[in-house]
Amino acid sequence: MANILVIDDEESIRYTFAAFISEEGHQVCTARNYAEGIRQISEQSFDLIFSDIILEGRTGIDVLRAISERNLACPVVMITGYPTVETAAEAVRLGAFDYVPKPVEQEAVLQITRLALERQKARRDKERGHRHLEAIFGSVEDGIVTVDEELRVLEVNDAARKICGLGRAAIGHKLEAATLCCKDKFLEALQETVTSRTSVKMERVECRHTASTPKIFALSTCPLTDREGLFRGAVMVLRDERPLASSGEDPGGRERFHNLVGKAGPMQRIYSLIEGLADVASTVLITGESGTGKERVAEALHFLGARRDRRLVKVNCSALSENLLESELFGHVKGAFTGAVSVRSGRFQLADGGTIFLDEIGDISPRMQSSLLRVLQEKEFERVGDGRPLKVDVRVIAATNKNLEEKVQCGAFREDLYYRLKVFELALPPLRDRIEDLPLLTEYFLKQFNEKFHKEISAVSADCARIFRNYPWPGNVRELQHALEHACILCHEDVITSDLLPAPLAALGKVAGPEKDARKGIDGPMILHALEKTAGNKAKAARLLGVDRKTLYRNIEKIPSLRGTPPSSLRASDASAPQRRY
Image 1: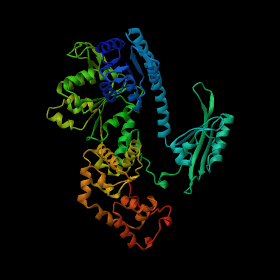
Image 2: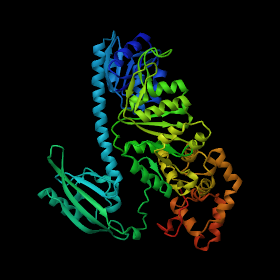
Image 3: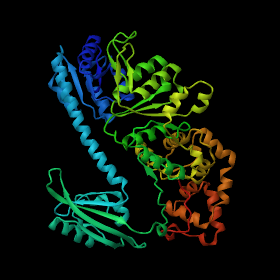
């Protein structure tokens, strides 16, 4: 079943398309003009879009441009009575799949729909396979390198760069051209595998790609074949064998997991629980304050589990009235209520075989609680206006920022539904309970906003860092994200200062007297480190330290080793200099 949008200013055309396509079992949404169509495209995803070429002051070409600007890989079919070479060429250039001439014929519409959806499915299958491969390459801690029969590098993951210094710049080039101290060992093992088409293993190989302590790793290679079993090259796997204790690494300290960020103890426990729950069909209740990442946890549970190839359907239960929510969840038949002009599938039916995420579950009415309980118990439901039960195979993940146990005690939430939802509870920690994740989250969001706003912001000042640590973050990670986005928009330098933060945070800086606090903590190594980071620019160094230039100059004069020190004589690095950036 596909989700299809029809944009046309003629009601008869919209009705005709909806009637034709609904008979094939697809979900059809309609829009009467360009603005309404773009709004729907922004609010939900579609598998196929039909658009009239003429749209009340706009054109179907404008729809194509809007889809192209949003990087949406959705086939678009133009509806027109007067196709021309010019419009056809422009439409094809912008990615139109085909034309449907007026007057429309059912068979023609259905044939184009089938072809477009088949292409969409093939594209998604290819992307899914590519994403899975990227996820595997990116998530494993072992270095992975693939080469063809001429030992030309095909792919390399980030772990290989960390272990031996072989980065993605090597892709497309022969391995022998890479600048690696341990290259000969790689070539020896890979050449033997390519020649003999057998696996090779080397234990405790030493690599000195930097001036640091040499890394010890195990190396293994094996033949690389395609689906038809044809030989295509070799795969090399590198495993770092240094004891974790000597490297100072935390064996459970993952900084990223799927789309979640954080290395604090509470987050490590969440990661482990997600791994254990991903492949089971049990209902999961995600609890936590607003902005803690409940939707991201639901995505991780779905995309890391056995249902990853089917749909994840999301519903915000608090955003809809009781009647609208019932129709949204279970669908309706034609004539079920005013405005029900055709059969509509509900979210549970769309999620059949996959997962449905019910956000803000604590806000649903008693009647909806009863309907939801039936789905959880019997795996069936009825459309609005229809007495025939429909069976579904759906995994339910619910989320709430309310205390459901208290709502049960006061009679506002059904006890039997509560225990049906709480087969397993994932309680997300608030940001104030994992303050050590602030630098990691800050770096993550700065990278996102640098790309979004085309900036090169490297850090937040020491004063900002202090404000972040002392702020209670009632809005949690979402509030931090919005605060940094606000600051990035206003920032025209490479360091975010406290005056660029939103009002509640900026006010904290003024109340606490940031410069006085910052001035107390400045010492020689910190100043040296700041000057090194800013290539000797004292104005930027002052911002990074959270003080003004006069304060920085006074501190430099108080430290004999820094008096008159030109920027060019600064050391390349200072291991004793503490990091003052986030």
